[in-house]
Length: 148
Length: 106
Image (cartoon, chains in turn purple, red):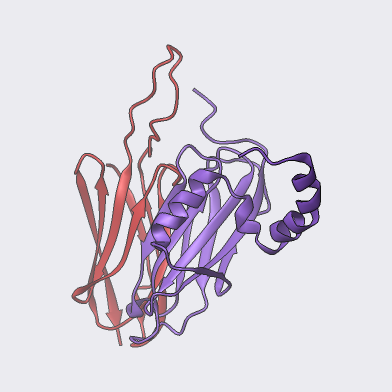
């Protein structure tokens, strides 16, 4: 569909406000598809998940990442899965962590590779099936995967 | 697979939340890295990590090439019983590496 100039101008303000309210809409298709597949059609709410990463990354080959989820981690209410996605690496998936009530605290730390400055998204699935997410934007000065 | 390092407290009180840190030596070859002749270095990664403690898998991870070389994974668990923790890393090729650590719970 090719939008007409009038439709574009008329829709300009509406479109801008949608982009501000829903930053997820700005993510490239590959990551969105991967997140949709993980969510399996369930809605994802922003919140409860915390992603702790440096804002400015000097070396994309090893970027520290800490993800935690606000959850009591009891038998009835705990985090079952935390999935990490990226926007601009060759593959949208980073990792998937499976947790349970025996974790005590929904907290995982690892080190990842980043091929470019991009947005990282963390999605957590709770025992009751609800999905929560957060994202972090990073600037990478030396990307991974460029050296031969 | 070569060396693996596991760091966890030697002793803990029952019910305490302890942190377990693991590091394993592995290139985590992405399969996207070009060689000077233009071909790609074949993919060779660890795609699964598990920790088994007190009769259950308390933590598992599916890893993709975006995990840095020498995968470092740290997580938490509740100290339930004295005994052995089993750590298992599985490669794409099916090769498995296992490490054990013990904890005393009072």
